[in-house]
Every structure is written in C-alpha cells, then in structure tokens.
View 1 (cartoon, rainbow, N blue to C red):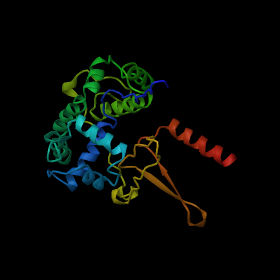
View 2: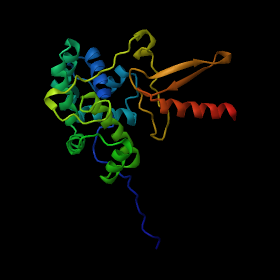
View 3: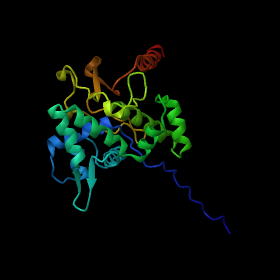
View 4: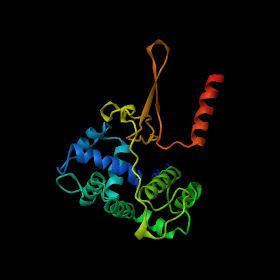
Length: 251
C-alpha cells in the first residue's frame, strides 16, 4: 500500500491591512469622485483604479479598505462607509480636526494596528523590529514586511509619530495629518493612463502608488523603459537603485 498522500497547506498570516491608511484614503477619494454613495462591485472598483479585478493585489486592497472601515460589503455589493465620507469631506473643506480624528479612527479600526500602537513606548520601533515582532505573531516573512510598512505609513498619516519616529502621547493635540499633494500635477501621470498591469505571476507584485506610479524613459529606436517606483524614496533607496543600474551597465 502506498503511503497516504499528505497535503501541505499554505500558511496564512493573521488578518491585517496590506496597504496603508494613506493609500486607502487615496483610493477612497477616487471611488467617491467616480461612484459616490452608489453600490458597486469589485469589477467597478478595479475599473476606476485601472487594475485587474481578479488580481490578488486587488483582493488585498479591498480587504484593507474594509479593515480600515472605509468600505463595507453586504448582499447588494460594496459601498463607501460614513467614515470614508467624513474623511473625504473633511479633506475637501480643510477641517483638520475632523480629518485628524477620522484618520486615527481609521488606523485603529485594525485590531492588529491598534494593539501595536498602544504597545509602543516613546518611539516607533525600527522596521526590522516591527517585522520580527509580526513574524513572532504568526505572520509570514512577506506579510510581516508588507504589514510593517503599512503600519508605519498609516501612523504617519494619522499624525501619531513625528519626523523622528517619536510617539506623540497627547492625542488631543495631534498635528494635522499630512496628505501629500504634488506641487506640479501636470508632471504626474493621469490615473486613466497608468499601467496597472501585473508585474509578476507569482504574487510578488509591487504595490503601485496611485499618485506617483511610474516614469517612462525614452530609449533608442523608439523604445521606452518603464520604471515603477514607490513614494517617498530615501537617499539610501536611490543609492540602491543606482547601484543595480550601474551593475547592469558594467556587465
């Protein structure tokens, strides 16, 4: 008799947002502009953003929106929540206080994010420490990195940390959350011209920032090199990119 077949189940990480609250707010704003308070499905959401409705990245985005309390689902379909409308309205009217309160509530809607935030001392731990902590809590290596990044960006979005990663203890006097707006919008690729196609077939997709998604570099012979890049590149990030490109040139 042959040995009984064994089935290896893929390890699943605890439920936590894969995208930051800032990223999800950007998505919420676009959905509100195009769809408003109407009921929609994932295909319509994907059409607004120019992404594939069946991609795993789209599933994770919808999940993040729901975990942050910006999107709700029932038998009819998907709708923007009251919190989503408060954020959009507060941003449009310049009501910093209402926006700040809603931004913090958005971050704390994730039990994982809220528990981590409340456990921090006077300073936000480094990314490596966050990744290690999440890994010990059952997250896969990939999910731990993605969640740690989303957490850091979300806390900055809500104004919980300052520029030196210090935790702001007085939540009644938080600074206004920063939502970056490009100084020259003509330099940004319009959303309807952004290529959100899959960059890999093995779920190692890159999260594309909706405001600064890509840059097209003209080459000889009419060719174009398209570079996808994240927002807020640090000098260290730029040096890493340069080193890789330089290695290609020298090879």
